Image (cartoon, rainbow, N blue to C red; front, side, top):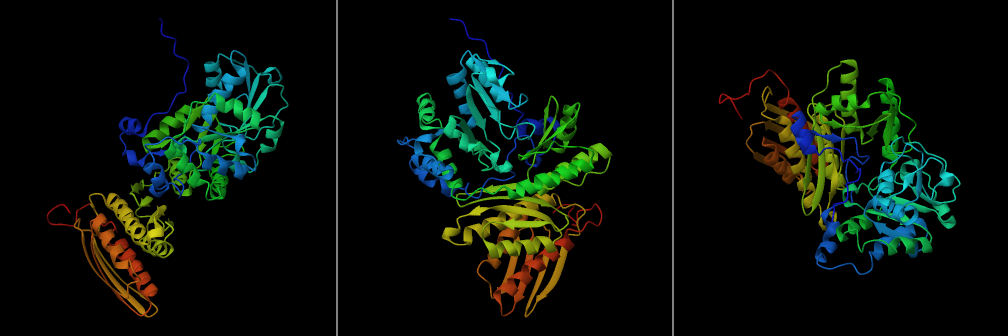
Amino acid sequence: MSTPPALDAYQWPPSNERISTQVGIDVRQIIRFDGNTPATPPASARPAALARALADINEYDRGRYEPLRRAIAELHGVGLDQISLGAGSDEFIVLVARIFAENGTIATVPSDSYSMYRYAALMAGATIVKNVAQADLVFVCRPNNPTGELPEIPQVSGQLVIDEAYAHYAGVDALERVANGAIILRTFSKAYGLAGARVGYAVANAELTAVITSRQAPLSVSSLSAALALAALATPVDVSAQVAERDRMTKELGSLGLEPVKSYTNFLFIPMDKPQDIVERLLPHGLVVRAFAKGLRISVRDELDDNVLLDALRAELTGSSMPAPGVRHRRATAETLLTARLRVPGEGRVYVHTGEGFYDHMLQQLAFHGGMDLRLEGVGDLETGEHHTVEDMMITFGEALNQALGDRRGLTRYGEARVPMDEALAYAVVDLSGRATANISITPDPGMAAHAFISLAQTARITLHVTASGENAHHVAEASFKAVGRALAQAMTRDGSLVRSTKGSL
């Protein structure tokens, strides 16, 4: 028996580890602008969401994840028998090609569209044709990948499949066409931020759904992925911030002479000759974008990540200097999932969101008065109290700060600050000693302030003394965090190239 020939297969981009080795950059500093995914996972993606699924991991799901299918059906106002689950929308692209166009014809709208349609055609032995009126199966990518445009839906005689992977960003959909026999594909990979979970679904009439599910392998989605998708549906998806960032990026790229196509997605497509040249020039900065035959595609992440890309493009295209890279750090425990991006020194651009409002505000004060750029976000098990979340947010910040300080060469090393806040007065002294020591006296303590500073000192490897008192616990804590920030700003001032120790190292 001869081995069948390999088909032209989907080409995955290189891993972070391979890029790290290739260009000699810390793997943690690589930022992917080539996958059209959000900068951070959703708040729902934490260990607690998987607890029940892990407890039953030895069992199969007997109802084909009925709670998840029911939640999707309710979201779209359709029946349970109109929803089928798959391993991303790609599973359905391959499946419908085999069902409706095996050894037949497939057309795509626009013709320059998502490459998986062509690979699905190859696997089905189908031929790609340009005339949609002559095709057995028509894929409409709406909005379109890779160009970001919003194409019109043509009248077709064959089976119509509308791929709405990016529909959240366009604010429009074509779900009403399900009644006329269309199949709508959706994914949890983009707006929901669960690309690694590989969950997609198809919405169709009951008859077509029965045809699709009868040809699927049983349970192609894992119970862990289904649990993450169900948790994500508990909160309405909100892409407004990413849409606003997309519009900002469009203007910023325009100022560099790069003119993106009007986008209805979470990425921008820039027509150009030789886009691979830009890809290669950005790689040494740890920035990964994607080249296509007719242009460059750039994912929209968030302001902090996008500014790094803009800085690198400006440096490459205009010859300006590239700011020092920031630190990227992630901490995941059974109770919390937190990410931090830190630049020291910065411009006081700070965003902290863990759901623990008071201490989010306290860390914002510390970072702002410390002259840092900090974006720290994530989620913790607030249902059990504030302890784990506050402790881990300070550990995460401390670990990121330790990375940013490096060998501490050229830093002043010592800093102190006294900060009043109404009746409260706080005094902080810091030594970037490389030794973790904390002597904290906060009266009254709102609950976790002293412990927060101890966690910071341990992981940032600093000596920290804080004395604060007053009548109002909020005022006392806020004065303390501001004082520590201002003391750190002083200690992190550069005054040469020496390590401020007679030992020669800290």
